[in-house]
Image 1 (cartoon, rainbow, N blue to C red):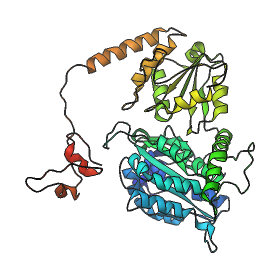
Image 2 (image 1 turned 120 degrees about the horizontal axis):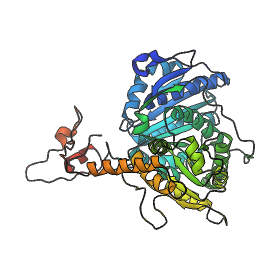
Image 3 (image 1 turned 90 degrees about the vertical axis):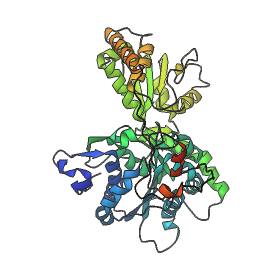
Length: 470
């Protein structure tokens, strides 16, 4: 689709590095998200749709910089018909976004639809689950659509607990996208809105600091080519929001239609793909998001290039939509493999889906993930994975199929470095502190002789010696 690519103020977008002839731009993950509504508005205009955009969310970490960038882009957003209005809290923000999908239910609407975006940190997803369940069951408008950005903090760098939001999205039956890198962030935003419109569902979007706070040169001309499935028949009345709409009718759409429809959309648009292939595959890796980048880095550590991957029989499957996992592409990828290793952070989310897909098949590969064949933990669910951790596990699995001097040298180097890191060293913990002007600076002082314990909120820091400010 040919669209006019907006060029923004370099003060916050670094657009002084943008080259029209090359069609590329240097963006951070936050800046890519600011571009989403601008690019969607341009695509809709090219399609002769009279749409508007709406963005709301909670002004907290790890997406705390998003609202600042949105404020700075106010004139560009307004020119594109996009309104940014932060919520007083997460629930009110989500409720406003839900209202944006109801515009077409009554006569007199000024737009064909409103594409919307909600953002908040992982605990905000927990808090707003009631709104998400109701709004996702109701659906989106045909020319609207909703993205739900969860700022997850796997390593608990700016939170009271480490967290991931996949299971909360699944609880609300919202499909979940997990991008790896800035280009995919940019593309998946537009794909997500298209998926939301076609399936009638709110789309969960996983973000973490490693991608949000990184930068890269990305392709900006036109955006991804999005197609609608031709192998799926819509149910009577489609999937989108309507009125009246009894709760049991909403449940029927969610339970009977949404998963296969989402699978069809994922297949049509190649959200899951083979990233590294082999002419005689034996060992397969399934991964997603940041873990995919960790796998690539680990293979580079081990000296596994394209030729060695072919000799090993190593192949890599990159998952873009982590729920509901599309089964046909996965089965095609696994055909002929002896072993599948699932590499993902936190819980065994993909691994459990893969095992369920292959549960009743007579011929299936050995599927490993968090534990090996003997039940030993190899990929922990705590904190976050590193390329070195992944490299050690990969080396052990590759050794069953292929031996190489480069892999042995890498393992020796990693072992040496781990021994050095295990040596005693001075610890300089980051002391808890409140943001300038925060009312908790004084509100946490209690009367003499009194005792107070903290609940959820920044005041939690008074009970934690090493907590960081939210």
